[in-house]
Length: 247
Ligand code: 5GP
Image (cartoon, rainbow, N blue to C red; front, side, top):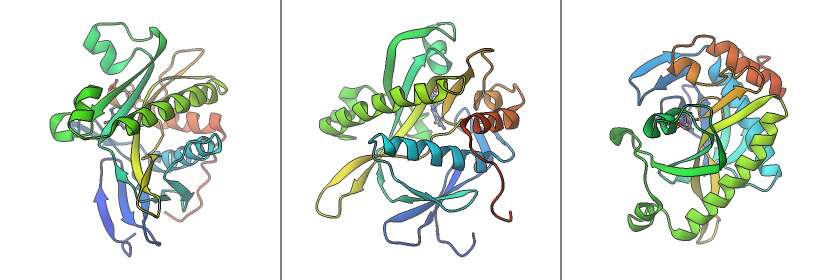
């Protein structure tokens, strides 16, 4: 990787300058963090699994008309994406109560909601990614009203599709986090695309039959078996973990 120009190192990914103008290479690491970087560790092979699951999910979403930043997977741990101006919001969808929602409102995890909730957090580690109301997003100029409407429409479509997609392999999609960016349209404007990744790092996945957690909560909550859980999600989705590169 040393011949590539590093742009940014995040908690789970490194971004490098891509081979063509306005492209970026996302390199997926095995590093895992939780509770805003307080807990750190690694999940062996996670980077490869997350790269390949993200490829599958982004490809399927673009087939149902969701524009994404994804261009192609380049290797076991790398994918080429369009460079976008990331909107600093974490867009969270909740189908079933878990995590922060359970804690904040004192509700037991596992309550299926009558309809999905979409909420926003400001993407800012120093502030601990605080929940941000729509009004604040608009007044602070983080996103415009039409952008927010588009983000919510796209997020609903993503949720409808992915709930069925995971249900088809016996997995309940409890909640997840998305990020969106503005992609230059080549003229004066831009359009909103789904960015970042979709993997067991940023969603909660429970086995339909046993309720077993198959996501990063295994790491966050010291449940063990995180490598096997990530591998099992990949296996059920038909994602091959056969190595293509020499590591
Ligand atoms: P919660 O708000 O309950 O902690 O998380 C809700 C969902 O969004 C979970 O699926 C969780 O994995 C995801 N999520 C929330 N914040 C982050 C974050 O900062 N990074 C990642 N990777 N996922 C997040």
